[in-house]
Image 1 (tube, rainbow, N blue to C red):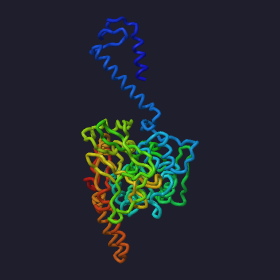
Image 2: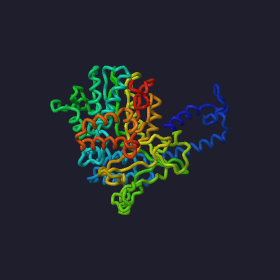
Image 3: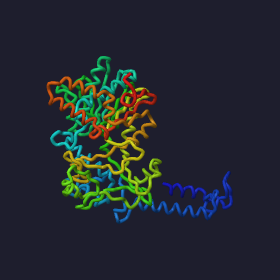
Length: 502
């Protein structure tokens, strides 16, 4: 495009005689170009430099016979070759890398988690108590969701108790969190009067069914709307509920206050990983080499003897390698002021998807109503995570490159990045550790109530106290998990983040 415009401009000036000045400009050379403030020699040097840059750019885009030098040029994962028989995700990934060269880490993660035929989240219920690989806070105790329901009620009251509200959840799992927070919120809000709708952003048919079972009754079957491609029903509280595939399907309804929740949503989004070298930022990409002893760090076992045993899940076909050249994604850290002073050897993780999702959440806020509550595993520091990608399989940490499609992948959420982005559009509060947040909301009092109510049932008391410890103990989930809230600019500080119940 640049070259076409350049040549057209030159042709239009071809007929201007040498030495003739434009209305305001310097003399025009025979080829129709203005030298401006440059000498002809300076211009020729600049022209040569630009030509070399264009040549390098064209070469990097076109590539050559060595496909491994053409890294990162495919913005989306390529379609499967119809002539190649593929029956598993590892085979598909290996075939793709053989054809196109190493793929970006984000592309690898995206296929492992959400591939329609082989993805971890699209082919199973990851929260199933018998076969799932992890347990989330809402599944540990209903007290967790109760505290969030109370938080919602206080924010809703501070905003004048808007009549029409919509509760939106990103990554709603089995629907447990929404069930528990609505149960708590409804006890108080129903006395005042509120018209509510629930929207679940969920693409998995398996999890949609689980959510319907948690939130609705058999009398209200799930109905599919072919025209809009969504499912709908009515909850046990009499509120309408809708399931959509993506956040793009949520409209900005006038006169409706949106309250958005995202629990352990951002930690499952694909990331890009970079290392600063002498030649600039280079992207980590995923290579395929059978029987590689994976270099991704493995958490130490509690038993030294177990550490000495060879873990077969470290023998992986896939592994990270540093791209020898710049990829298009290398520009992401290059143009960020947050990373400009990092020394050579620094490694960082960046989640570009997180920014896109957060912007949609913030856009659902009105000038005076609505809120976003983020709950996730992560850090809130000046620098982003360095090397946090991990695999979770059968409740144990394993290499993230083992058994693609069968291992859950997770990363530390960069809360500071979310805060820096959100502050441009609204008020941001936190991040606050989960233990502190739950205690501020009154979890300790709630636990005491339940313990007193079950004084003659010590086994029940043990379960209640065990769940409380697991949610709040700094050595368990109390410190690593964090809360962050976003409200319209000028809002009162919400409870849990320095505000009060008043």
